[in-house]
Length: 251
Ligand code: SAH
Image (tube, rainbow, N blue to C red; front, side):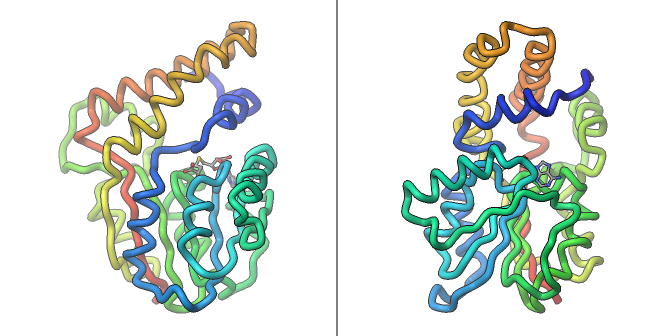
């Protein structure tokens, strides 16, 4: 695989409403599964928030405050604009920093939320590192790429072992949560429309403009080829993997 040009990656994804598969409906479903009272103000961290599509849903549905964290200030600027437009900015603050060195205190949060991002540091490292920031009985909600079957065709197995060797079955991801001091309370598989309509469709629509902006440079074309290959793999093998939402509680 060609080396990833981070500047191009950010440019490609910042012109989007979301930077990973998902939907407001699935975020809301995960919120409902927490079973929390909407009256008590909670403190929430949204890690790897991107331009904040799930941040807005959290702010609309949960009483309390949200710290939205992303490595790239470009995404946080877009999030802040969106928050102001939706009059949610009083509930949201942003922090540009890495998920691997979060500047938070022990037991600071009632909820740690992270959609389509924990893979960046790796699921197991992430659930271990973030646990101390949660209050006892606090909730961890993450979406993580997972196998849906015990066996799968060689091509998809090889693709994901190269892209993200920590991909694993739901049973194994759940076991890791248990092993690292969480009680898994629920999980659900992200439906197809979250990938195709909400993520890959808009990606395909953005490609011509992206290539024009970068004068069809070799690295821009290489980036597009990576995106198209990911889409092809999903379209061919979507019955074998998906993002899965894992909801668990710190013991
Ligand atoms: N939650 C958003 C974005 C998911 S994409 C959504 O579902 O739409 C992953 C996000 O993680 C991107 O916004 C990317 O900028 C961010 N990211 C990448 N490396 C990071 C790091 N080391 N620390 C924090 N965020 C990071």
